[in-house]
Length: 359
Image (spheres, rainbow, N blue to C red):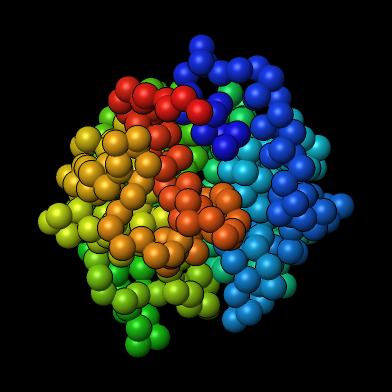
């Protein structure tokens, strides 16, 4: 309710006292407080950085720092809260250029510690360490941009470096065929540098970089207008092979001609990022899906698709921080709350007039 009232309702129509009450309710929300309590003195959660959810196969017993940090932001906690400041120090260190092969032993040791869940394996596998460092840097830049640091020169400098690497990939022959064979499996070529979900979200919350790299943003839109390959492949990180999770190799929506999508929460997350990047109208599938979702709203703007008997199921772990904002409850209306808010927010981002129902 707080985010809908402060981000969808026009400022002139907001009651300051109601804003204050809703802000306090967000801070008192028990699931959010539970996340804050789990933060360690280092500013980390779960002893790892990248885990969207608990994955025992990778040794992730709970969501990691980048997802818990963004989860609290999505729940409406302001970036000025101490819980964010504790993590900011660590995330800014991840933006630095120190590497594990630095001749200064103390610097190299700190670089290794910044690999968090991958530091033990990286001691014997430098290639894994380089991959973890690159993805960790993108994840840190994403969290900091989302957390209100869009004007910090360290964030913007990192964003430009990431954008340049992706732009070089988009212009290369690898973009058309980014795969190779290794260990008898199809892997993403280690030289390929496609956008990750972290890079896309980072750019979505950095309007200054979008303006400075307008040509690159347009190329990114063209890239996401082509369907992502359906073939199975692995990410080769040093000696390790991982199933892809964060890499985006084209349009991830998997929409049919009528705009139906298999994963509604991910679709809305992706559409919000595209709206912030100014790309929704450039990408045909995004236009179809958004039109479909808006057609499912009733006269009051409430998302009300036919046969909605349960909360939309999130199939992708990438939305773990994003959906749902409201925990399970007994009211059938809770099946619609998140989607209605997100569609209203996307409308505001696109400049579509939003009429606020009076209660």
